[in-house]
Length: 236
Image (cartoon, rainbow, N blue to C red):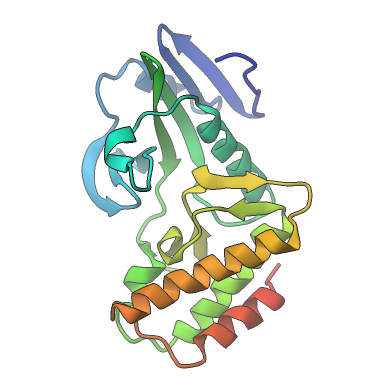
């Protein structure tokens, strides 16, 4: 990897075809560089791909392509730029108090022309994605969609565009705090253009309507108004 970017608080370790970027304050993470095969053990946690658990409180997310050819491209990435961009966005949001799981390490293994990439994050305990939470009627559903709007407005104000923004990429913890997930398709700008903000909002609303149409979630009739009100008056 040429022209590596240096991230404050992170160290880089290389051995053969493997590159590991990890929290320098957690030197034991360097041990995962020598692990063979996928990191962690299979879990019931689900994202865009199945997630593994590393004891005691770490989640491993293998980066996978989506789209029509995902079964062909799968884990194969031509560069590690996407994972480094995710790390940059994650650090940026967390430094401004936006709840997003802390990235602890990124392991990148070169296999021929391609990279296999695994992102290790800190587990958010006792949390479910917003879609799962809203599968049952909830008294706080209107409040939560308002919070979702406020959270999305916060990342937009910080110049972040989340190209994969949908209801399953918001996580709800026991304190009713919403976390934003899976930033590998996010991009950071000095100032986010208005049309990109509108695209992001439209994408999120469309994802909610899709699951509503499928009968997976139940929301009050004015949920979109609550979402847009939250977006216009974000909590800082």
